[in-house]
Length: 172
Image (tube, rainbow, N blue to C red; front, top):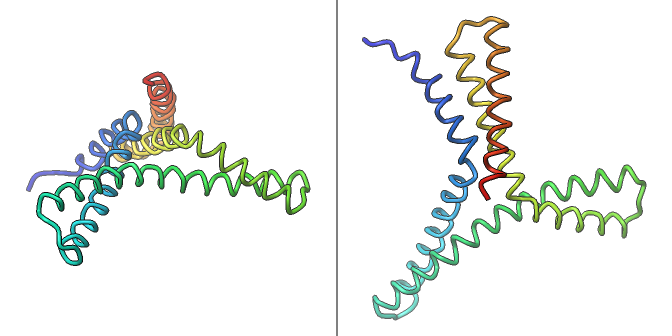
């Protein structure tokens, strides 16, 4: 039987590079395809079970549902990130400043708005971090467990993280 212990480290390293450099684009494509497919299927099911429409009309409804669902899905992902980060940041800021309830709500709303504007940058940074962590674990698994190799893995991961942030920021 062949030795396949090298597969997981190699997959982690290759997947880490892909995630770090094009992770946001992959995430966006996956979210849009899944969300569009879910809405298209729901509209197909509704149009075939509850509406008496022609097949051509059903196809148009499904196509429009896919397009709307795709963009709605990406909007909802960005909104979820903005709500989570904005709510936490708003509470931390308001607590640190000792603000009252009205000011707390305003700070939270402002934080959510800022987080929504920065949501794509946050996703890019998160994908760069995730890819760098995958590369780190791939190098650690592929090498002997020593402090030197862990430091090499940390160095390579940091370089990849910085390059991925630069690449994703520059590619706009």
